[in-house]
Image (cartoon, rainbow, N blue to C red):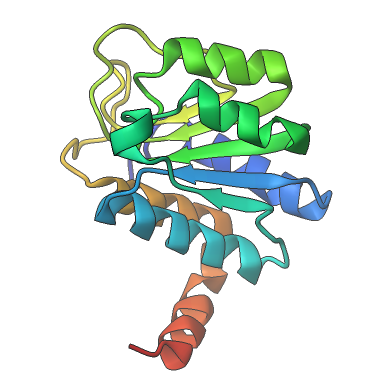
Length: 170
């Protein structure tokens, strides 16, 4: 079965961050796809015994789309940290470079096209990368994130889903 390029690397790096009690920042788009992606990944990380230092959603009206320098300035006191973007980041070449210089380790989880090159993130998981052999390119980001969570949790995913669904309240 084909897997999305770098999904195993991203899962391993996240498991390592949890095991080493590293700071983890989730930086998600403020739409339904981004918010759902953050929630799902946060639950997977919690199920491993990890915690999220910050879940951050930029304000599109004031900050535009994607990673922005103002948000990075607000978060820079949390360096070193694993900085995971969800439903954004693939188009943020300069901002990822700024995050790298600040000392963040960036993982991009996205589903958008790579139009103007690829940022220099530590790991990129995006089925629309030109050299990704994953057969279905039409996943929403929450689908990419769910695939990542399946990779992170392995055989434990069914136990986690059962626990989450039993505890869910509308």
